Length: 201
Image (cartoon, rainbow, N blue to C red; front, side, top):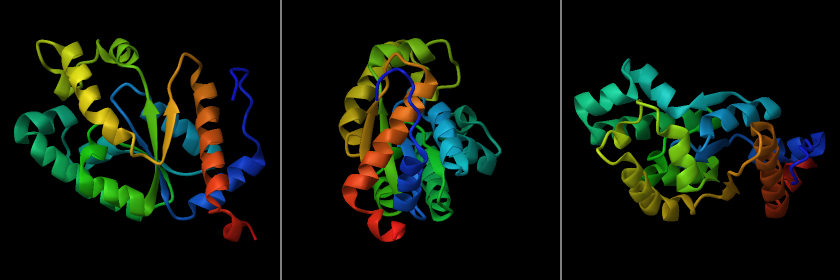
């Protein structure tokens, strides 16, 4: 996919929908990678519902993510995250954007592998930090050295994110172009896997 913003065609969209079946496309990656923004756009192109995991957790708890961290701690948040993602996966097909730590949980990864197709939006740490450095809603970055914390999280998480079914690298193009690149990668994935043959007959 080049940067002239060619939209994937209807055949590619059909390939994705047929290959996906009842499963969910699950976006994973670091905070600031663009999972929610790109997830909404991909969902719209595929005519699928979209859900943001953090928003769903906040709705279930009637607290913000930052408030859950402050009041109950990260372990409590991760437990709720695991339960909410299991429920959302059972309600597929849809597009789901997860929080940065969700894919680190082995139980959650297994659930995603069973009922979803995972897409890692990979981005350089410098790009991530530029995008999120002024935001105050990131509990894990509420440290004296947020950039150092971010780089530590990248070092811990990227080898696990690499277990995702697909990796699409974030680069300096528009959100529209990134959306089409993700769709093209999904279409290629399902076409190569042979998962669409039976569904398309």
